[in-house]
Image (cartoon, rainbow, N blue to C red; front, side, top):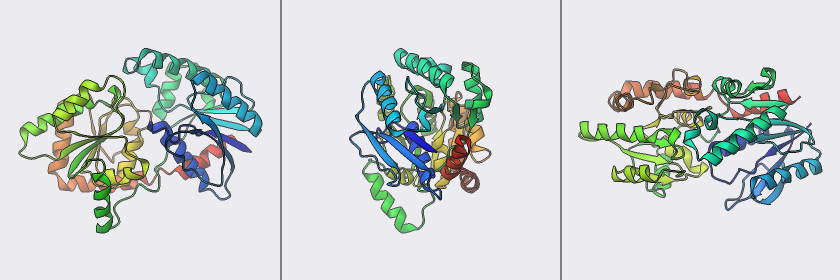
Amino acid sequence: MHLVINATEVGRRRGGNESFITGLIEGLADLDPSPRVSLLTCRWDTPALLPPMFRQVNLGAYRRLPFFLWQQTIALRQLEADWYLANFFLPPSMPCKGAVAVHDLSFRAHPEYFPRTIAWYMHWLTAWAVRRARLVLTGSEFSRGELFRFYSVDEEKVITIPYGVGSEFRPVADETDGATEQAVLSRYGVDGPYILALGNIHPRKNLTRLLDAYLRLQQRRRSIPAMVWAGLRRWDSGELVEQARSAGVTLTGFVAQEDLPALYRQAVMLVYPSLYEGFGLPVLEAMACGTPVIASNVTSLPEVTGDAALLVNPTDVEDIAAAMAQLLDDASLRKRLQQSGLERARQFTWTRTAQRLLALLG
């Protein structure tokens, strides 16, 4: 069986879609024997570091979407693929069986979070892919339910396969590692202690309410750790970015994958008050690093965190502020969440994700 994966987003530095593909490829590479896999890649400023045992077919510079989808069709014919796996979209002509990974339906549930044209093409191209795919993958039961809510799709072909946590996400080994990580973080202008929020600066990440909660804590306490926002600026975020800077928030911009473990490990806590998630990789990555987590009590996040995080109402600023204060003041709670987080994160590996995928493809 020859599996071709759309890995063109590796190197694009855009977040969760790239993390899913790189994690899945890592899991496939760890299998013994390694399956027959080819990777469609793209030319970005950052070279794609992918396992050498898998063939790579570079499609050149990224082009406008309609033409790029046709490029994939041509490549699949040349590779004589049995299965093709891609995020959200499939090419217009499929010379093999198709599997599509739909990580979330935020563009349907909350189109107001997106520019109109983006919400429109995400909806129609995803709908087209879901209808034509032999297999539709989601990372959570919540996202599986959202697929049925928004699209008419055969239940039997929609499968939940939980995502994994990379092996690089682990607790600090010793004091030497801690000193090295401080040097890494200094490149991003980060100095501890700090409260971390990670993800694109985007309406659904709910950073406006997080900032309000942080400002309340500043007014009530003599001292409070700094706040760090790690992620790219997205549409309509200019005003929020200026408000955050005025409040003293450190904005790192994009953080390279190899630097993320240091960012998690040196944080006092991760606060992830997202309004809508299809899975929520950052909460698991933080847990795997031994960092206490505060997360929303909505969408997929309770399913992913179990009882290993402090859950809050993301629309209640006071609830978010109270949870942060509780973690800052209660050392026993921090320790309990660290331990339960480590145990929870061990249940999610990319190797298991890869094994389940191959079993489905047959």
